[in-house]
Image 1 (cartoon, rainbow, N blue to C red):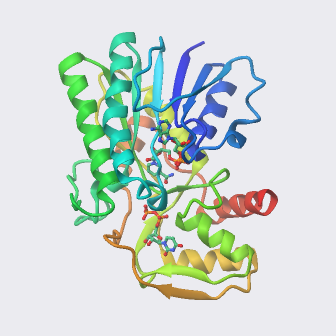
Image 2: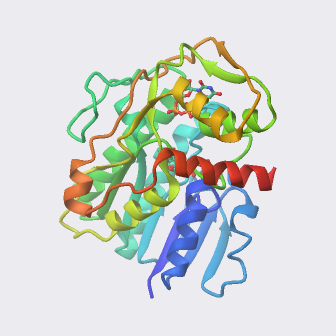
Length: 310
Ligand code: NAD
Ligand code: UDP
């Protein structure tokens, strides 16, 4: 039985990871400051004797003996990470230094939930891990993008300087059950709007693309990455390569919800990346992993969740 710390464990992705690692027989410690996380996400786990919850902000030091750390603590939706930009970048720098310190002292393996945002508005398509990205360092998305880039740097330097056992997952847009209704990300926004027959708000032309992965596929990829040999330190893209325009996503959600909503076009979001698609050759080769859940099936599950939980 491993002792595993999951920071951001009460969030959308973190709560799924807590559940899966508990089901696999581990001791799981969920650490969260509840900025965007919610106790409801983990309420089905609290009676499990192998589950512990710590209310704590990773920007403050903490002492714990642990075997593995998954660092998911960081608001992920532009709406939430821009709410307190300074706090967002502190979380990915000061917070990450605190966690790397725990990993160094207790010889734990540590995985960083990095992001496709480190590629910015990419000039190559699809994006592979060798691409250095095209990120505005002073824009309104920078607190998140540059924070995550700095976290990757810190991970690599703790590996090079202190032999900390690190893993870096570059996660592409992920959706699924337990997303917050007011999260502001496109999938939850469109589903809630469609279920209420309200206008579907497209920012910009709707021609911008994203590649959406269902949360179960992501969890599988993260655990496989954590379990790779210590000698494997390269960042790995984890995402679904099937690319959709935001307009197509809106149409699909209207169709699947049988909604009367109309699509409206609002001004584009600042610095909005125009296209995004992961090259997942490395994940296929090293993790023997590829996503299994198609957008339609994942959307049906997510729509069902929002119908029941609104
Ligand atoms: P989320 O907002 O639902 O979860 C983030 C969790 O971290 C929340 O529970 C929040 O309360 C907690 N948190 C935030 N700041 C904290 C701090 N300083 N100390 C302790 N806890 C803190 O987002 P999510 O979609 O579940 O994302 C999880 C991780 O995966 C994030 O690091 C995010 O950057 C990364 N990621 C997610 C996606 C995606 O599409 N969901 C894509 C790329 C990367
Ligand atoms: N988007 C949109 N309407 C919304 C929310 C988002 O058109 O109500 C667009 C947004 O401008 C972006 C895409 O959908 O082009 C994905 O946005 P999201 O915030 O989900 O993720 P990210 O931009 O971080 O990839």
